[in-house]
Length: 191
Image (tube, rainbow, N blue to C red):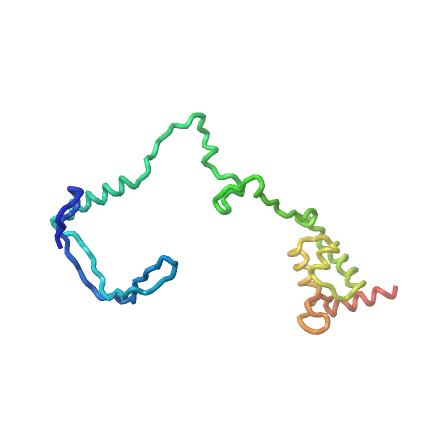
């Protein structure tokens, strides 16, 4: 294929046309003035236009010209008083990559005293646990955390040593003392 007249001197005049059958069925649609769509036809063949090898250099120049025209002009500016603070992300600003406006900031929920719990001595905690299980033989982990105000993992370690977890039955999801500890508690109670 050869073009009759070109606007640009870099625009190639000779092209090779490659015709292939379209594997994906495509249709041509038209919209009427009332806004309704209708099928006008079907596309069966695909034509690819490629400049001849002798025109490739001119075609490359044309592509570069188009790219230059479409690019925005950029400025380089020297910044005064540059300490780099504007380049470092502020804490919490990386989430979503947009800085929230003053009305959009959300406060993180605080748990207060539940946030940080300090561990007591293990022996002291075991005594407290025995007393709690003496009052009520079955307790959930949540109940124990609330009553002892101890870290969850610390309580789990103690419970693993002195208690049995009930997976089934009426007391499902609760802890109770191991049988060997229950007997010692029962023996101490009559005194």
